[in-house]
Image (cartoon, rainbow, N blue to C red; front, side):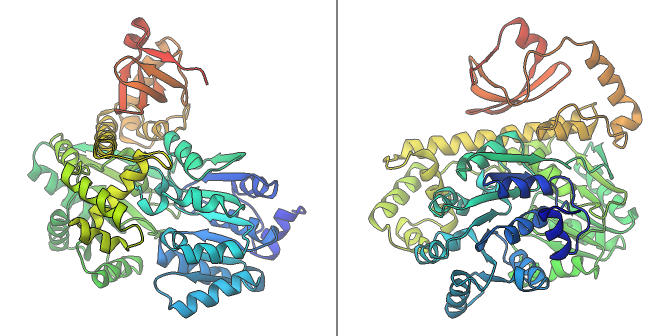
Length: 529
């Protein structure tokens, strides 16, 4: 290795070899372009931005939603020496410590400054960050900016406008992003001349399978038996807090050292549960989706889903917590048709007109108040105020007055999207195709080979489906193509597999359509780019 990227990798970070995607991302930034890097956890996304940072003059701003992850990365960078000095500003620091960190970044004493999106939204912090004139901005967990995604976070909504004023090149990074999420990230972060690097999503070492369950008792017995029999560390995902505690007790009774994790637990209890699992003090954690971002235990051998996840995106990310060390691992979904109704019911409800009206009034009359004060004025919970305030931003263009009907229409559209994603999970559970192919097609990676590791590949069902697909006529549609439907409106083609085409419509979410029927009746009209 002799070029400057390779030299920096070796001399600063002790790396003799770069992984796929790292060089492309760094080179794009060195060329003055923005970049979107989509790669699974453990594939080296962090090194990509760190390499670019030491090769580009000026400080680097890292926007990350997790305090623990910020601290880990900052300490990791500090260990490499003076060229990678790092500081953090967050709610965990005192005002004096935050001021000192900002001053150090402004004066060129540190290369990396970590902060959360809500910190950047603070006017004083934003002004201080602007004065330090960052040359590179890193947005970690960038899928959180997209309302199409499974982990949308309102704090990310203003990032685009906040970053635009800084004038720095930007790299957005995420482990999971389907085609519409990628488009949304680029649009919302105002990325320009962007290089999109996607790869490594297959995770070939994970054996995927689905078990059909007849009754709730059948489902429970199978999950507990599997958790008891599997070797090594594992995660059992469930859909409710009550189920987390129930299954944790059952798995413990079956002889496994077990802990429980959900958002209803006290912060100290959650931290203890996570620490116990990460240090292997316990073998199994039974958890809701609250157990997720920032969890990077390399030797998780299996992930069981006692209930269906809310979307294929969420499933891919959760099952992908297995086998990060590259060793053989397993992901099993226990599917019961009745669980679909529960997931639809769990989608975020549309706020009542009176709630929206009160929040709109509070936002208008108390614009400088804290969110907690605005929530008190509106007589709603803080969480509900934040959700409605987010819908207000989503529903209206800049400078536009938004009314109750527009806000509720946006909420209804989002609810429809969420429910359509539940149907895509049904598609995964019921498909006879290669399960990895199904997930990768949903995420925008088409024409991938059969994995030969899932239950459908082992049974021969996937090969039979592929043979049938080969006899089908070629599709006139391609992934990422914009189309229009008379009833569903405009949308984007997500995947074409055999005689099925999946389209994500702007107004009604995901729809799986019969390709022969679409072609025969001209149901989809391609839109000019």
